[in-house]
Each structure stands twice: as structure tokens, then as C-alpha cells.
Length: 276
Ligand SMILES: [Zn+2]
Image (cartoon, rainbow, N blue to C red; front, side, top):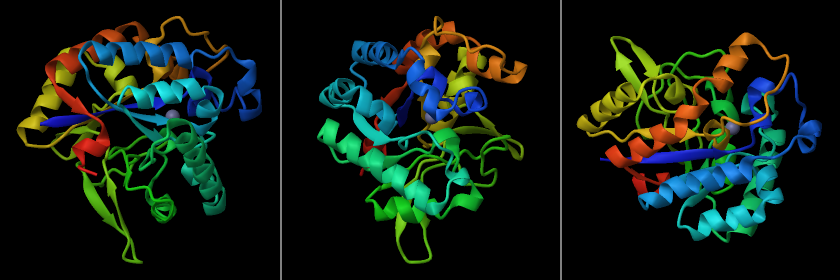
């Protein structure tokens, strides 16, 4: 089985959990670490000639066009993570469309490739925001990877399908969905797909879970952010205990886990796994 490997390319200060402390207008004030951290990822993938999908913020692409080009030239897939990391369900359909269109324009201009994939900031396509699929289809996006089939305080569609499937809309149009990987135990889905979960859980549990999916002939999908491989990133002061734990737990372990995952499993960009 070939699994999908994905990275959401954004800086450490742009995450939803810091929204109450750092506004969009304040982003330029923070020292950027996204380029060096993305280079770290590219280096690790190059060790084993593994290709992945990079969901990038348009805001980042505009500031680091050379990095966009470098990712594309390395043979990875570029996809969009929106422009300004705004939650889908907190935007109006018009705001969402403007943000999406801007990100696609920037990413296509700098990468010279066609953008066919989308991942919502913070997995924010929930049942109330399925209208977003119509906008994605309108902008020639062929697949989405924003649905997390779990219960969570910020995101999640607990009763969603767990593996790639086609979402059919009322107007007859459709789009592929690649939900983030979960482990099903009795009637609950547990997240194993990456990010904080990957940092929190021991490697053997990640390996066991992914093996279980692959034995069922199902592809898994993993995600990470560049800042998750950066134990030396500046610490944001005065944040809540939960946020601090979620953002900073086991940052030192991520690079090693990523190396072991790409050694033990087969990975490819989403467009290849879905044959698009
Ligand atoms: Zn994000």
C-alpha cells in the first residue's frame, strides 16, 4: 500500500491556537523560521527519495517564492492551504472564495504547476461548511483533504467516511475527499494521522496503526507542519496550558519519527495515491 505524506506549510506563529495572541496584522513582526524548517523536511525526504504533498499558505508563498520553486523542482506536489489561514466555518462563502482564489493564483504563478488539492486551515470543513466543496470545484480543485473523522473542540466530522471517497454535490458535481487517518476502536475513531498526535504517541503505536490500515488495503495519510520539527522556535508567552502542551510537546522527536516512518512505509503525494 502506498500512503499519502503531507505537510502544511505555515510558520509557528500562524496556527489557530495562537489567534487570540497574534493577529494576522502582527505576522510580519515575528522572525520567520518556515524556510529553514521546510528545508529540513526536504532534506529528510531526499535521504530516501520520497515525494510528498505540500499544502502551502499563499501568504507564505508570496514571501518565499524561491522555496515554492524549490519544492516543485524537487518533484513534490504543491497544493493550497488557503491564503491567510482563516477557518472555513468562520468565513462567509464570498470571503472563503476570495482567500482560496488568491492562494491558487500565487501558488500557480511561483510553482509553474497546476494546483488541484486543498486542505482547510485547522481541518475547518465541518458539516456546516460543506458549501466550501462547491467553491473548491468551481476553482478546479480535484481533491480535498480537510475532513477529520473525530470529535474535537475545533474541527471534526465524527461520522465521516474514514478513507478516500467521492463527495457528490446537489448540482451533480463532485470532488475527491481524503480524510485524515484514524484508528477505529469499537465505535470510536482515534486520530493517528500526524501533528500533535504523532508527536505525542510513541513510534510503535503509529507504526502499528498504519500497518493495520494497510493490511485492510487502505492508504493512510500523515500530516506535519515545519514548526513541528523545530524545537528551538521562539516560545509564545502567556498562552494557556492546553495550547502550550499541544504546540510544544515532543518537538524534538518529530524528525526522528518522520525518518522512521518513511523507512518503514511507502509514501507518495496525494495526487499519485488518488491517481489524479
Ligand atoms: Zn494550517
